[in-house]
Length: 153
Image (cartoon, rainbow, N blue to C red; front, side, top):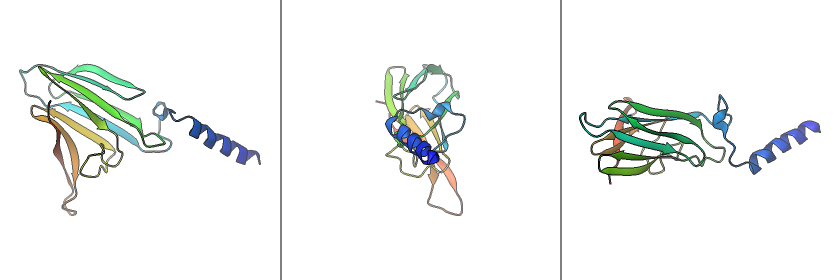
């Protein structure tokens, strides 16, 4: 009887604690570990890229990235699968805010292809933002490619 009460209490605690931050745990309890990686692929001899990334609960970075430098972090998907990370980018006179993770299946809700690696790799380029996608057109030769996901504003 006490075991059932403990299980019930634990489940009730999960339901009334929607902001439970499981990323502080070394391993994810209810989901795989996900990673977001942002790489500066802008041309050399151009203004430095400033990046600010965050979620509702976590401040990830507010920093400058050199050419080919990357910013990356790992996290656990929320029990309710509503985790969202966004980044704001400034490069010279241009700036853009984009969602970098809000869907475990494809990194972002509007992603065209499945994400089988739990890894969202973004490249910031002169003509916009690219997300690495899994090539599902050839089952025998699986490969990844960079999909042009967003343009600078």
